[in-house]
Structures are given as C-alpha cells and as structure tokens.
Image (tube, rainbow, N blue to C red):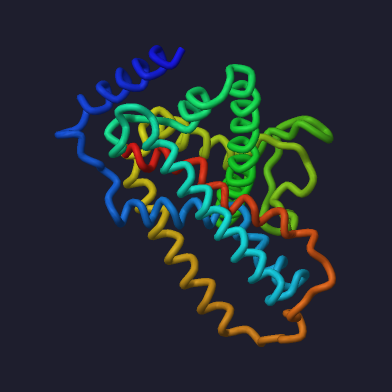
Length: 260
C-alpha cells in the first residue's frame, strides 16, 4: 500500500513538473499573501461586526487570537508531516491533504477523514456561494431588476425590482435559483479544473477587489456617527462566534499552496 501510494505521488508530481519550467513554484510571495488573505476573509467577514457587538471587543479579540494560534499550529504540523513523506523532504513532490491521511492512517480512517474533509469544504463554500450570488443579484437591481426561478413558494419565474427587494436578501425567504447564481456557476466552474498555481491571477484580482472594498467601507463608516455603546468590552451573547471558524478554514489549502 505504501509503495503504491508513493508511486502515485511521484507520478502525479512528474505530470505537474512537466507543465512547469524546472519545477519552479509559481505562486510566489505576493500570490501567497493574496491567497492567505482571501481565504481568511471568507463568509465570516460579513458577520464580524455583529460578532463584536454581541461578544464584545475584548472577548472576541481574545477568541480570534486563539483561533489564529491554533491555525498556525495546524499549518506547521501539516507542513512538517508533508516533509516526512519519502522523497518529499524539500516539498519537491506533489503531496495533497488526503495523501497524508492515506499514508499515516488506515483505509477506514481515511474514509472518515475524507467525508469530514468534503463536508468542511462544502460548508465553507456554501457560505461563499450564497453571499456572492446575493451580491450579484443586488448589483443587478441597479440595472432594473433581478430575476430567478422560484422553487418555493409559488413556483415560477419571477423578477424583483429595487423597490420590491427584501432588505437582507433580494428574494427574501423564497427558495430560488437566481440569475446571479447562474452567472457565478458559469464563471467559477472552469476555474475548478485548474491547479491552484494556474488561477493565482484570480486570487490577485480578488485581493485587489478586497482592498478596494475595505477602503470604501472604511471611508463610509468614518462619515457615520460613532456609537460606542454598541461595542462593549464583554458582550452578553456569543452565538455568532461559530461563524468566525469559516475564516480559518484555509488550513485545508496549505498542501496545495506548498505544492505550487
């Protein structure tokens, strides 16, 4: 089993090296920064202001610090484990996350970890997909209306204008397949066929967009009145803390990042 796995890893590494020059790492420093920041500022970013208000700035800052330290420890462990794969002492081969599980654990444990790995990835991506699709739908309102195929209630095709749109979501509590979701699917599915290093330019663009959005938000917030009573040191509820865990799921992408 171990010999067969080593052969698979080496074969995949040779295929990937054949598409690169001299087995160079293609992501680089700025690509790594963009990838890390983009992964950290995931769906939990939107809930962050509410989390500070309900948990308190002192308590939430401590929790985020603990999350960060735990994530760093996990990253170091994953990277160290990758170097223990025969022939990968300097990350010269392509070793993925599930390769590590298959190497060090039994087939039964591998299946359990694979299921948990997929659930984690899907859970993180669902939040990103929903927020991105809703953002596209809201942007379409500026051009007239946002349309969707309503599944429930009252199935059928519907279009919503800006005056009819709900405050938290364009289509309210309706179950829909919106045009924004279809646009997102068309744009993102082709990227899924590429290696991480091949679409790093998308990460650069997303990072630049994040910087611009953060700057616009900061300028807008400075124009508003500051209400310090909304931000206690210790809040009364921590119900939104769980959402922040999505911001630290980037640990799963570490092997792919190191390979590139």
